[in-house]
Length: 334
Image (cartoon, rainbow, N blue to C red; front, side):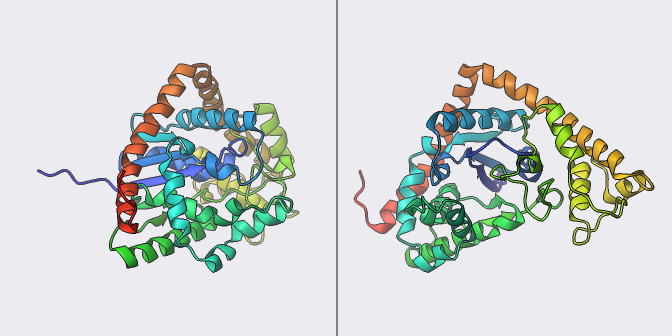
C-alpha cells in the first residue's frame, strides 16, 4: 500500500536578538506538535538578519543559542530538519533568480521595508528592499505546503505566492503554492508595557519583552510592572482591555486553561494576584527550556552534528528545486 506523503512545513526566525516569550508561544511551541503530521523544516534565518548591521560574534552566538533553544523547546532533530540558512547556498542562488521575477512596486509596498527603513534610516540597503525575494526562495526551495506565520506576516506569504505564480505562468508548474498556517491561540503575544504593539526583541522598552532564557526574578519583575487598566476586573476584551486580555492569552497558553475558566478563577481578585499568577506560570513554562538550552550549548560536538546534518538534508531537497529552476530559465548545466 502506498504511503501518503506528508505535507511540508517551512519556517524560520532571525537570530537578530534573543528569542522572546512571543516567539515561543506564537511560533516555536506550536511547531513541536507538528512533526508527527507534517514534514518540518526550520531554519535559523541568519542571511535575513544582516539587512541590519550585526556584531559578528553576537550573531554567531545567537545563532547557536537559538538552535539549542529550538531543540530545548521540543524540536527533535530526528523528526525535524533544523538548519542554518547560510549553510545552504541554494537560498542565495534562488533568491537572485527570484529578484528578477519580483516587481519594484511589489517590494516598495511591503510593510516591513517601511518599518525597518524608518528604524535604520542610515542603512536603507538593497537587501532590506529585496528581502521578500529571498524569503520566497526560502519557502519555494522546499516546495513547502504551509508556512507558519503570525497574522501580521501573511503579507510575506502573499508576495511569495505572487512571485511563484508569475514564474509558474512563464515556465509551467515549477513551484508548489504555499499557504499561511496561523495558530489560533497565542499567535500574537503583545508587549507587556504597550499592549497595542507586538512583543518584539527590538522593543526599546525592555520591560515590555520577556526573553526565553531570562532569569525567573527578572520575568516576575516584568509581569508585576505589566500594563493593565483601571477596571480591576479580569475579563477578556481585546479592544477595551488590551493589557489584561494579552495577559489572559499568555496565561491560557502556559496553563492550558480556557478564557472562561480564567475569568472565573480571578473573579473578585485584584490585578496584583493575577499578574503574579501569570508571571509564575511563565517562569515554570520557561524553566525547563532554559536549563535544557544551557545543557545543549555545553555540548558543542552535538550541536555541530545537528546543524551539519540539517544543512546536508536541506541542501539535498533545495538543490533539486534549484536545478529545475536553472534549467527552466536557460542556464547551462554544470
